[in-house]
Image 1 (cartoon, rainbow, N blue to C red):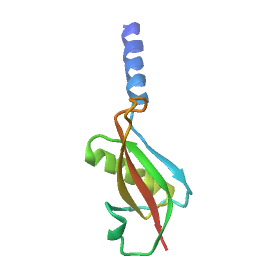
Image 2 (tube, rainbow, N blue to C red):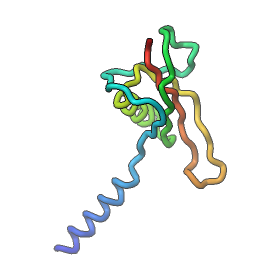
Image 3 (spheres, one colour):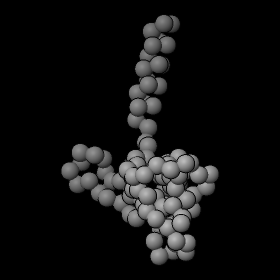
Image 4 (cartoon, helix red, strand yellow):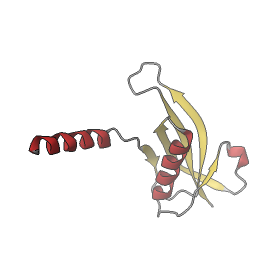
Length: 106
């Protein structure tokens, strides 16, 4: 029975280490409670400043959008502009990554 618990714990640990997360590079401001999502900077009607850049491994569209917006809230962004994806042809870093700019309204 003890070995069963160790095996179950090991599997859980392995699966949690493979969880997809959004990465961020830029300024960090006080957290926000909501984030607007745009797919083109031309659609943003408010004045803004780009405070940083987000990326996340591509997958299910809703999951990727949730991960990016959750990270954007945590770093203090008011909006994100999903700028597209980058495909890694070397296979070293996975198939592809979704990129986004983090915006703070002026």
